[in-house]
Image 1 (cartoon, helix red, strand yellow):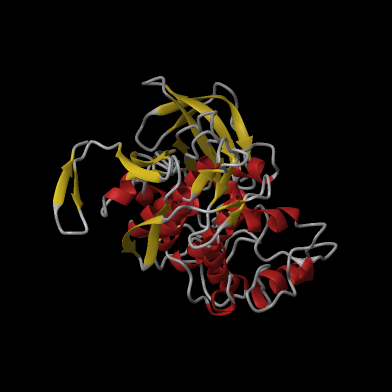
Image 2 (cartoon, one colour):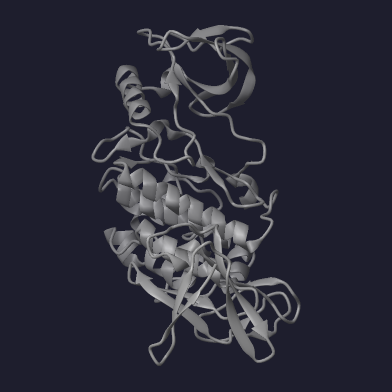
Length: 414
């Protein structure tokens, strides 16, 4: 049966017996058409994803999996999760309703093309943190994504809030959707045909997304990949059988091309060495060829919190910059050296040091002050500076207990 698009004012019956009316088209992609619809009973508006017939290879199985995911519920508020399926009719297409993206959210592709920019460095790092937190929730709930790529994300430039769409390929662990993923984002072992997508290959794809978000170029596309056209043969070689990180610690033959990868050449130097090392681990030969030594979500979260805590204003020019942990940093805006007066250290998480530079106006979050918290937005303390002295201001609602070097303790009210 041929695919029949929906028409304006057409009513579609849902699986629960309710109906929605089509009021317009929101967009079209490779899987189907997304319509704006309105519930007849409540008047609420939703998006309706209406699949192309040819996209769904096993319609009943696919429909049942979506139904199961709806019953289990969304892993977190970051996912634009399927809400209600349309009524299933054998041999005909179907779809599902979901929330509509608020206009403040902009597609990740627009950031990659520099059509949208983050309001601040903190907003950019918040976006990375939100992505990691979302996929931690996804995996903890027993799902894996299987088709993680740049088209899945929309981000608010002011604060880095993230929404994740196209969740119909999400499946439970050790289940397969039949979708391997999108070129350039699939883990090399999936490209080589060594295994099916799972939570671990999700983590590889997530590392690619984080690299694109922070650095602005693809981690495997450098001098060695400068082909006129990326045919399937080259795709398999670059992303599967012979992958090489552009900043590999032991092999510089695939370093960024000076004319093609200016983002990577500029932005790599902006980030502290602990972020660089995290990417070098994520795209090491052990990771690329053996699927080993990849960072878990908790590890990424702690690294990104350390990155957020290293954001300061350059005292020479006032521009935002990231500070190194153990040495002076060079402000990329003015070229002058900047060094923290010292560092506050917190209990380790996931075997990673959690440090905050002692620098005027540095912010500590609930994450730092509460070892069980992952709240990276609520400010809990700030660094104050007087000539030759630094202090810590309690910005939380909690009382502090301070232990002096001689063992005496003092209460500090909120």
